[in-house]
Image (tube, rainbow, N blue to C red; front, side, top):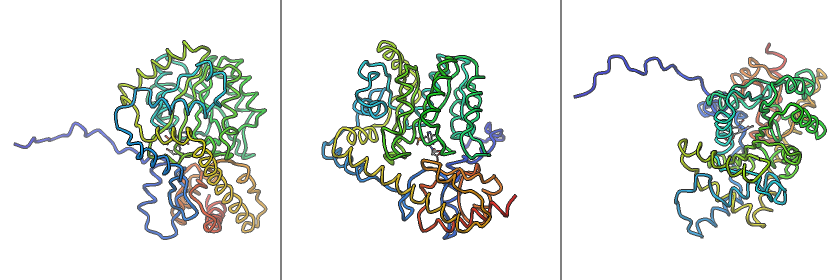
Length: 410
Ligand code: KET
């Protein structure tokens, strides 16, 4: 006999809104217009606007097949060779923090899962401590913190007047936060603004955190992708580590190795002693076990193989430079197209100053809607465009769309 459900107990479940970033890809897929362009999600495309699997990734996978690797469970903390490689990439292999064992590294489900594990640790061990996030920031930061019950507020970061960093506002807000807060910082290539502090500003930020007893929590999702150099892009994190801060660092290999769907990353906690690192690591494992038990092995082996082989490592760096270079190329071309088409004298040079995958155009929500509805250019509603999804051939078209939206839509 069939169960007769008169009123479903799910009746009060309402429809969730589409995700502000990943929902853009769904809308793009549904559009049948030939001119459509997906500048929503930060995912690298080739000059033909196709997804790109790095050649070193193919080679690393070939090695895995040849070795006949098995599919046994990984330990809760992940693949040992990966955890070693990821901490060394972050801090440099000869960093005293690594030499002294002052780091707890646990493999995570890419950047998001690693941030989530760090947030769960904060919720459990520092209840009530507030996390400060930049305004604006990657939208998912808020959800990650809210879903584990960690209170958060924002610090000023972007100055629309100068289309640059509101450094004064940032410092004031860090100063104004309760002592011992956690300050979430983007290691490099700030998302969505593409604006990073200068080395001197990083120093001053560190001074302020030290003064207030705040703890940094770095989100490193673009190491190597901002400048093309793994070392340069980690300099902010290394600066804080060398000053002796206790801190969290989440890492992702989605962008720099193009491993988006493999979900490979790590959460690191840097501590004053090896003994504390061991204790913290044991508790991170305890948090991970009931969530997903242990992490997936495929991406971890790819990273470990690439980093562990000097030939593949050099090839990776060359491919990363190639990707970062292609994005710089379209950035330049888009700027030139805007400059030649817009006769108003508006200064578009902020596009060249921004770094990483994105450009924060300053387009409002209704202007961004016009980009999509009229021009079939898919982007997030905060005015961010992913230049990683643009090619040289489409720069003129995009410039026309931006100029139309900027001047003709309120
Ligand atoms: N941190 C930042 C700053 C970030 O931009 C992303 C992804 C992540 C973490 C997480 O990526 P993961 O694949 O979990 O390692 N950002 C792009 C994709 C997304 O929204 O999920 C984006 O902003 O388009």
